[in-house]
Image (cartoon, rainbow, N blue to C red; front, side, top):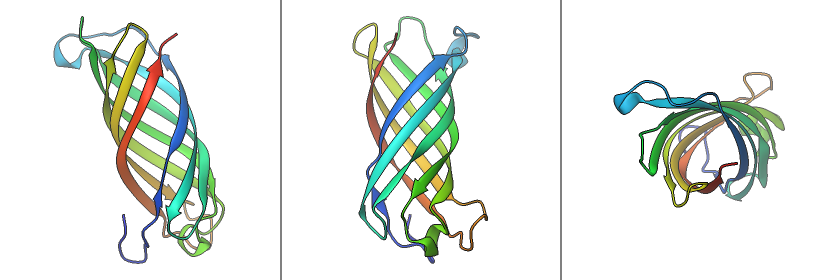
Length: 150
């Protein structure tokens, strides 16, 4: 998000995730569900703003709201990771940075092992005050993906 001392930086986000269900769905009612641990690698092309790329990895914890016989599985998630970027060092201070992410979305199962995912994500990029500058980058937007379950 642009703001004081933050220019507009628009970028795409391409990623691959591998998740592991940390148990079967528990509880009942709306909160019935399970936790999932996810490892993610991502790369981005910056198409507007002072930089050309962002690439890194994130570890996520996701809670899936699983209802019996439903093809729709909403989820909430939180992630943290590290990345490399060539964004202007007056903004992020150095090539090595950290990212914190939160998101909410849903999976729609189109077959027993295939789902289409739609989520909204917020991402914060910062060097955690380990560089000479640390204005950071805040980004948000929708994500569309496809999942296959082994």
